[in-house]
Image 1 (cartoon, rainbow, N blue to C red):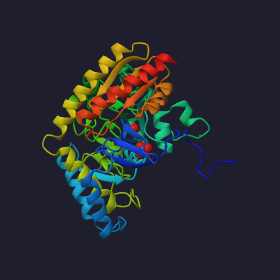
Image 2: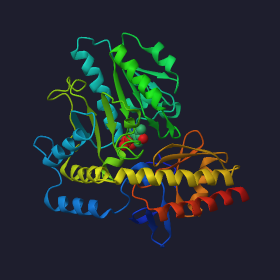
Image 3: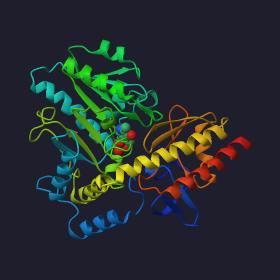
Image 4: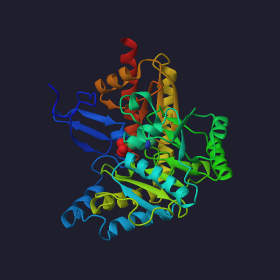
Length: 391
Ligand SMILES: *Cc1c(COP(=O)(O)O)cnc(C)c1O
């Protein structure tokens, strides 16, 4: 008999009842170090006092009104994002894949309004992930995500990750945009080198097409900048954000330049919940916290420390781990042992990591983790590796 919850996930036998900072608790009191943050979502850890305060206060006043009315919390969050990024304007969604939907629609509408309606194609890369909506799966094109779900949304051209010549060759008079994650998350923490992001920006400028960045996983302080593309010194035309921006409240956004967004006039897009007062009150608190003086410096310092310690772990356990890669607190340990076994052994040793493609385990800890948490992470990962070696 089918489970009452649609069985689309193979769930680990863990059940948490409470979270605090970098820690998750089961009812029996077992205490896990959370290096997954609910897949890069709990950017400020669990039950951050400021987020709890903001959410409870907002909950006592007003939850939802719909976008038929002005929402001051939404305007404040949009202003904050515009002030701290390339963007001139923001649309709020409830998830990353909804942000992908709008990014695709926006790019196509831009060219339609420019009198180039044939420009509908979007170039994407293998190993990418853009969510599970019809546009998201068609964009990524991963076999296991699209199989059986056709007909797929047309207009995506799948290219080889890292092949710049392939990009240049794929551009035609039907190309609207390039869509890429600055650091691939699900694909196994594969960063796009700064020089390559710069080259993609240049290719877009020369071809007169749009650069869409998917920063759903790598954005909001995760790499040590508010947005990952800042490291490369470039800006996109359109950017998708979600995961970390709500700190655990379902919230996403599409940020865009005035020009890229110019086709999106009244009535062209909408969302019932997107940008509601609860979500945006929390989003404001998250962004304010991440932009607070010293916060990102601290992320970078801790990221350096964690990475250095992980290099040591790999050196001590060459049978289990191969390399560490990534940016800031978005790190991947490429495994020699099966990554699923390493994640499961981590559970035995009360440390949570997240598997990814390319036999990688992801470390996406709360950005607020402490140095003691890092020390504890290494103790637990060390035990995990030892357990794998003994198996
Ligand atoms: C998680 C993710 C998405 C999809 O976000 P959802 O909120 O699950 O819809 C899209 N792009 C990237 C890069 C992601 O990591």
